[in-house]
View 1 (tube, each protein chain N blue to C red):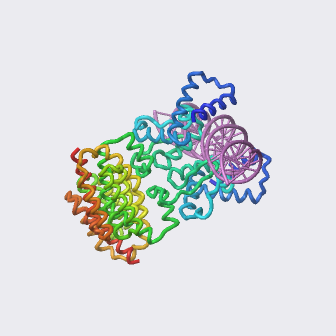
View 2 (cartoon, rainbow over the protein chains, first blue to last red):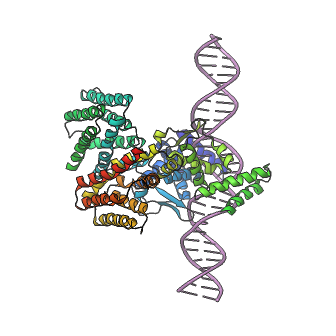
View 3 (cartoon, each protein chain N blue to C red):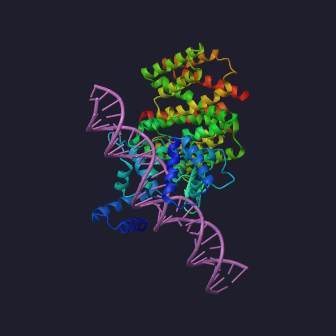
Length: 263
Length: 263
DNA sequence: GCGGCAGAATTATATGACAATCCACGCCAC
DNA sequence: GTGGCGTGGATTGTCATATAATTCTGCCGC
């Protein structure tokens, strides 16, 4: 990895030959390029991550977004890489670009919040209890209804997956499995069992919400009653009792929400 | 517009000078380039639209996705344009690319269904009653809960917007406004009044769902009872009655769903 | 003042070169 | 024959440069 970046730059220098870059400047450029490299599987994804995080953390709210040329020289990458990264940001709704006007950050209302990258940037860098609450307010809309649909439309394999998630939670109780992963497995299984692609789409959202919320709720609540609540959801789904499944799931997430409200 | 495309191509030909392109071939290339131009504000967006539609309609399920070079020559655009379009498709989850392996279409489970472009491609080209049903199953998860949150957290301006939507529906009843636009305005106002960015995100989804569902439900139902139902939602929100708002909205969308079920 | 025109800044597009990656096939040793 | 090794080729990744298109800014003429 380190070899690649320095090689590329070295080749660039030797080919042009006349560039007036000082030693320190080149070293610094190398460092930045290497950092980018670590952030993704290639330079473009590295830039995407870098710029995406910068945008969601509001670094360009009081300052114009840099031009392609500026980004390219600032991070020691070519304009192609820069452009492709910006195009991906455009596809996710974070920015829009027009000639002469430059690239401008869009209001957060037009960001695609259900994009896993955007969600990750938001959570990694701009976490707040308010955001966690909004997350779980969304879950209380989605998951109970998904459970109701799951009760109506689940297949045998779906039911197996749900039971498996439940079993993992029980195992975790006795320290044989990771409680968080088990919890996630259960909720994801229910979403998939709804047999509705739009609900299935929330897998990543729920996973992110759970992984984040654990930072706050893991040691507060006695988790013993929780498995019973989860089991109630599974039982209702198995019995094809849509209303029962909805209510049970609603209770589950309602508990989380009131826990957050206390904080 | 037409001038631009031919000019660009003409310049390309005159510069290389030696290209062995026949007359018909060049004409065809022109035509394709022009078609792309029409599909978006520039060539890249044209390609994005073209490829996106092709993917969601399953044109590459039994056939490998073409390479960058193939796409470029097939549509008479440069590799830059092709690459940027593919990068945008990557950002939306439709494809993934790796050296030597090529670009491969991802399973639809990893597509970002809440991306407005993806949604549009899906609806424009692959419409079905099943999809419409899944859409409204999603709405029955989202909108009642959004109404409940709106009851709790709405501001004065939110309430004004909701009332305005209702007024437009009443006006539409007497043919003074467009019924569909009025309906959309109401539902969007409720979503925004939830004061939760995740619910606000569904504006585009709801708008799309409504605009599409109208093709099926517009002449079937007597719309007279509908305004009363919508008003019930508004009243409950104004009274800060969360449960009432949720139930009223649930009834509203439940009606649509049972209408679809009959078809 | 105002309307249009010229210049400049920025993105959009094209082109060509080379690097990185990784698969497939063939060769060689045993 | 078979297994491992290596190498060639195909494809995306990156860089560099040139030119077109777009549109804002400011100047100039009236």
